[in-house]
Image (cartoon, rainbow, N blue to C red; front, top):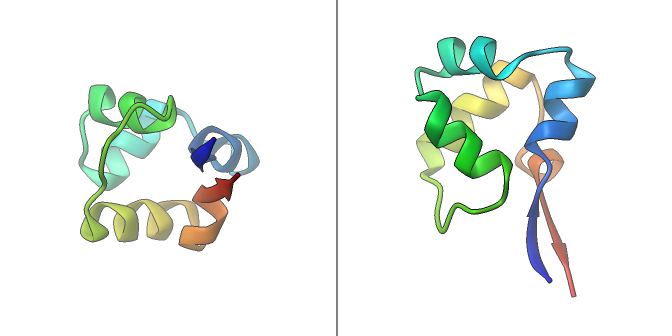
Length: 67
């Protein structure tokens, strides 16, 4: 399976919409959607850090590895 992105789970836990997160992190909704659906091929550490800061979480809360 590989890496699973749990961005939607963390957003639901924090009751934050894609629009709110986009505004806080200064990333387009389209780019967040690609990440949220797991279609992203890469993510910059600065982007991951900004998302973690906005959602008050750790990278491990957002990314999961499954065999």
